[in-house]
Amino acid sequence: MAIRRLPPLRAIEAFVRIVRLGSARAAADELGLSPSALSRRVAALEDFIGKRLFTRQHQAMKLTDDGTAFYEAVSPKFDELAAAVEGQIEDSKVMRLHLGILPLFGSQRLFPRLPELRKQHPRLHIDFDTSPHLEQRVGDTLDAAIILAKKPDPAFHAVRLDHNRVYAFTSRALAEEIGQNPDAAALSRQTFLIHTELPASFTAWKKALGMENLEPAAIDHYDSGQLILEAAANGLGIAIMHDDHFNRSHDTRLAKLFDVEVESPYSYWFICRPHALEVRAVRIFHDWLVKAAL
Image 1: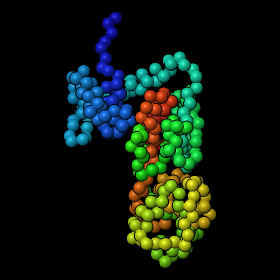
Image 2: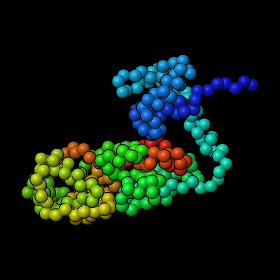
Image 3: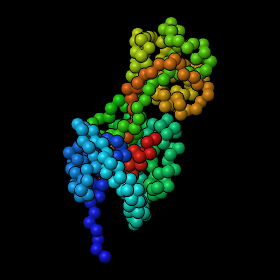
Image 4: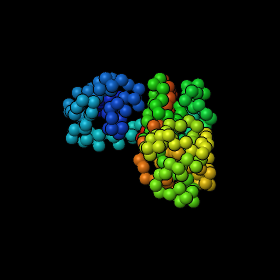
């Protein structure tokens, strides 16, 4: 039986990732390619099948009808092929990933979803490190890390995992005492609870309220998001944290202060050295994390 010719697997991978990530730039970053190299792979696939898969306008790539039909036909088979290859690998040794992570991201977002990863890749095991200065240790004692940062060092391969808003919240009793309307005099008598590595969040929040010069009674610094949540719930001060931290805590003891929209200068990022993506454990976790959209 004659073997049918197939397009290059890397070209199909590039196509699938552009569609799933919704951005050619994001796909290029994830694959460790330049935009021009990614475009060449897509062009090779289009030449092979004889159809235009994307329309190109400026920096944007939009699926054509043929592209949509091709994706719907190929995407499930691509995933099946990846799973089949994974299942046939003879190496039965445990794959180990040394991952730096912030505890609150781990408990609120990663661990509830980790059973999915374990089911897909039972040989992948993760050593977790919650020590400080994660970014500085990636490529040394850590294979990769999930960090909170404005923007990681450009030397890293980095994938932005979210966008956040800044919330101020405290215990229900203290929130009732402070009231629903921002008052500089009342706020100046309060203690604020700030993460040591996220000082710009408080600056952004004060600016949004038009209180750049606000000087509270005290600012208590924490290196643990979980402890900030607990301190706020017990009325020890006003926490300045991300909306996601507040919402995922499901802590009925907490109440948000004021109806104000404040964009956070910080996001969660996955980072690793570009060459680390060639390590199977890193690549598996990276690909799963991006697709899982925690």
